[in-house]
Amino acid sequence: MRISKKAREQAKRLFKACAPDGKLDEEKVRLAAQELVAKRPRETLGILLHFYKLVRLELARKETRIETVVELPEPVRQELVRLLAERYGEGLRVQFIRDPELLGGLRIRVGSEVIDGSIRGRLEALQASF
Image 1 (cartoon, rainbow, N blue to C red):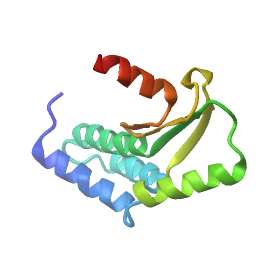
Image 2: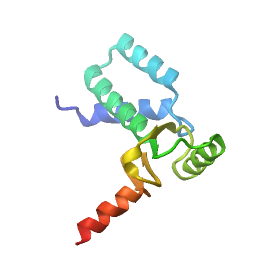
Image 3: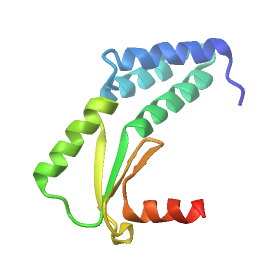
Image 4: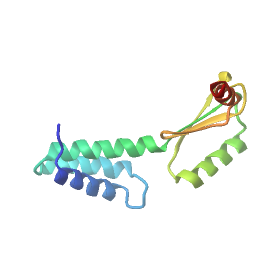
């Protein structure tokens, strides 16, 4: 479905209203979508589709995976989350995962960005350079 420029602009305004301080408020998103459906303005479906896309992209941008070989102690976890929040902003949804295939080090994925400090990643990079 082709979404008009006007519908995209309305969806962007709606999205900005749901994240006034840069942090998406899930309750405001829910209420905004319900109100939009209740009022049924022109191009409601286009506005909703683009609004959904913006919300989904924002949530994906805050999705964080930290993969390690061993279970990290709580103080180390807290420090990692603090450092990531400094770099990427507050509101990260962090998930810690044990992956013995990394051999050592850690791999961090925030949204679509990957920081690979694992031994396995270094070995693969070395192999690719040959």
